[in-house]
Image 1 (cartoon, rainbow, N blue to C red):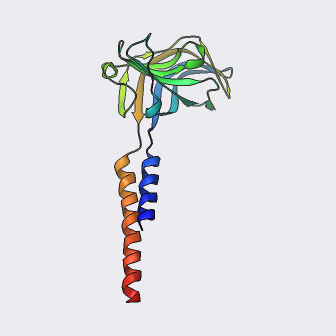
Image 2 (image 1 turned 90 degrees about the vertical axis):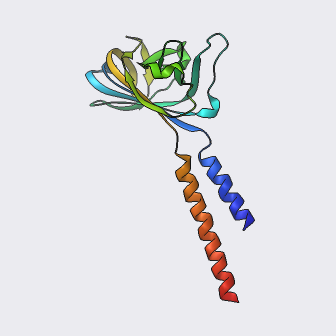
Image 3 (image 1 turned 180 degrees about the vertical axis):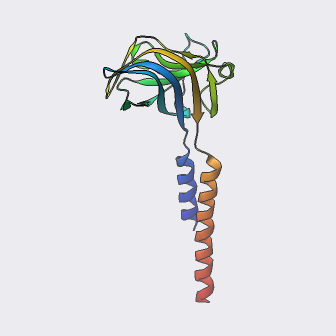
Length: 190
């Protein structure tokens, strides 16, 4: 029984080992793989890990987390970025978003909001909306061709971590069921 309890506790802790999902959404115009779009909903999702958030000594207040990022453009389709992408938060200018880490941190899509002045990518936040910022005309390689944004209006940044309470309740329920089965087996043998 002790082994089973230990196994469940270990599995429950691994299930929430710091996973975090960063989502940046906004209305934008540009092209994906040569197909133009105008005022389409652009959604970028980067899966990161709260235990790998870092900052550099040359940029105090700039927090980054590397991960795999996917893209969806309404009416066009979906793709995966092929460069190393990063979620970032710059506390000095109150903005957060997704950048192309492979090319000197060119920003793909950013939301400006005062909430980011004290955020550090290690917990859930948002949705936080505000004016959007892009590196207009820059090319970001994806599996569907280059993404080029030429304009963007307001955008929304959200970071979400799995809810550990729910996972813990499920694990405790499984432990309780195992204990009931074992107790029932002991009482029926008597």
